[in-house]
Image (cartoon, rainbow, N blue to C red):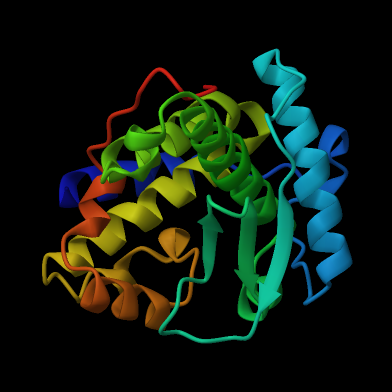
Length: 215
């Protein structure tokens, strides 16, 4: 896994973010700056863009955005399938770049929201079962399909972040500072996540998916 981290870091170093991505109306390295309205506008635009790329016009049901207080003991970003709610902490709005919000749209809405809606409608027992591999696998599949071209560097940065989190989960706590490109969430959130959820970080590294995934 450490070899993969070094390989990703090398690829990232060889790429540059475009200054602007017109079709998403974002400047890639500009921070959201705590602006909820701006974040939601980027999310909804990115979801629509992603649907067009994936050849679909139907998410299955509506989703909504909720902004919660900053708390490193809770997930910085998470999706609640029963309610169709995407929750982002205020800290995310303060630390994420506009391009990171696009990743949230791809992973949480086009990945989790669509898959969970399809599963819920088709197979309630499967929806209620423990299947984290297929949940995260779908979200990662959507990232692989959509974070390409001008979004490639961003996609690789998030891949590196998840490897660093998995390494942290394995007790390799000195790796974080070696890979600044992978520091896509504050380190205190990574430490809290692996402490509360030992082993779960691996689901983002070796995932699988199912027939309900849009991507």
